[in-house]
Image (cartoon, rainbow, N blue to C red):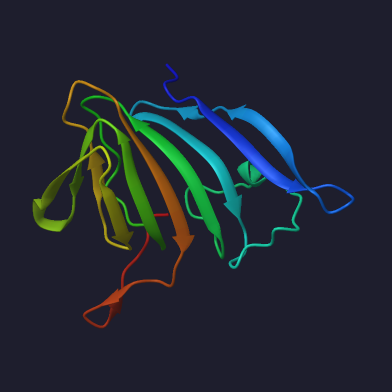
Length: 158
């Protein structure tokens, strides 16, 4: 069941160099057992190339765009959770609706509510919705160098 309704308005330029709307559409997501995920835009380089005419939502990325950025919306269903994972990225997560638990190593858990901002810096984590309402989160993921700790490189799940 789809819960997200993401309207995407993309700007650009016409032949005269004037600012125009080049896309105004609704983005559909991928629905799974844990929830729904909508990839609204990606870039494949950073800094971004605003002359690129490619539709960034069509780039084939799982979550992190190697060398670039990704904007993703997620709804986590009640009682569901993500896998325990680490991404090779710097993630900005903003809770738009509901509540979520962020679990790190050794069961360290923090409850996050609407308006909270989580800066995820390559740590292994799980997103868990312990409530009876869906939780919606927007993620901005920026590719990052691999994390090293205690003299060893930590593997990324994706």
